Image (tube, rainbow over all chains, first blue to last red; front, side, top):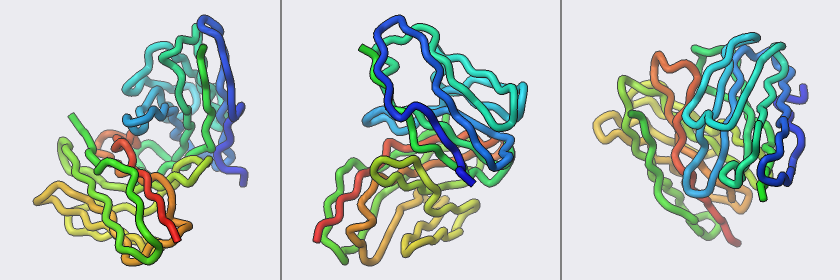
Length: 114
Length: 113
């Protein structure tokens, strides 16, 4: 199993550009989520999904969109990038929504917005 | 609301030293508690967990005990190695909150020879 994969690993955008961060998992996990990691702030939940076709907002959803058309994929879209979105983004998955809390994380995407 | 407070880093230790990283929490209800570890250039991975008061989680020589009376979940290891150098995150999940985790800010550990 590849586990949770994320692409790209690094990205530089200009203010106002849009892009999609890709996330895929091959463990047949129902629950997937996106976090951003900023210095001194730990990880904060952006959006999450409890299954295909179902998504919901986390703690810091503004400026981001998600969709979940398949169990495997959970892309994160930045509609109009802003410097405040410079961060490291992690995708995570777990077996189910009401499970043990153990989540499996991807290696991250480091995004810089100029 | 829910929150997790960790000691500030970085923590720098010599190999074979004793490690403690403090973690305290505030939560509604009865949370499950976790320690995640992030090695350089990698994503987070679960190190250990405890789901109820007085439970002790352990893995790879690390231990943490769920102390409800002090709302704490301090991470300890008796003898650290250079390979333990990483960032350690304390986290909680409340019952009925699905799989949503609330993380602390992370504590960087550097172990030197």
